[in-house]
Image 1 (cartoon, one colour):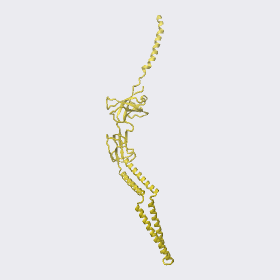
Image 2 (cartoon, helix red, strand yellow; image 1 turned 90 degrees about the vertical axis):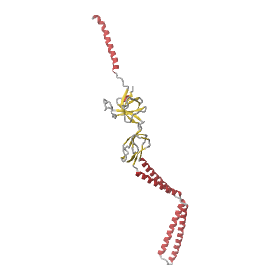
Image 3 (spheres, rainbow, N blue to C red; image 1 turned 180 degrees about the vertical axis):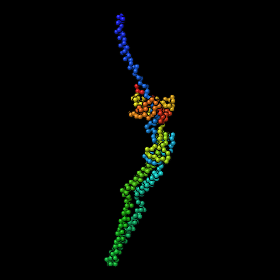
Length: 337
């Protein structure tokens, strides 16, 4: 034993080196490798503005007819339904008649008096003057007879009233001839023009209301669903049909809030569906929501915590796929390093 005492320092040094080396290696052995991807389930949706519930817009009424069926292709602007509009058609016809009358009256006014009308007015004036001359002679005669006491005051009064009436008739005839020769006043023309503009505005309004009873699709696409049938009442809040452009779709993936920090815009995404086993569709991260909310797609994995909030990640498809609107899919997004 005495001969081995000099080995003790070497043995202690070896133990210390082993402990120090073990401490250096331990972090590497327990450090977890980050996952290569983030998995999330999602649903196939139409791009914003390409899945539209088509309704009346602002009218209340009853559906007269629906001109499309589910699965039918429609183009933008195509009439898909018609509301009952008999009263509005009558209003358009009445407004059109009112406009035609106002335009006719304005045309007659602006054309001025015809030569024949002016001649007739001049003749009427001459006739009125002749009556006035005769009435004036009668008044002079009756006044002389009254001074001689040969007529009563009442008789003289009658002739004087006839004279005044003849004077008024001459003034009226002269004014009419003057107006016919001068043409209409600018103020009168303005009044009649305003009547025409008012009638035209009323016709435009009636036509606009009638046009709103023709329900048109705002986009080209396919009729996904019909919500009402002919004879049913509708309001602006009740859609009539749903039209979607099946070529404008993406995937709305629901990423657990604990994983959202690993998702990066532009990164590639692998998309699979149980409906197409063995097929993988390519996509990329196009949009990451700025908020988290409740889960809307029920996961197929029973181990997933349903109470965990999720962030919506929009995945753009990089190729044409057979995926259908509303279909549930699985996504794998390349995680951030």
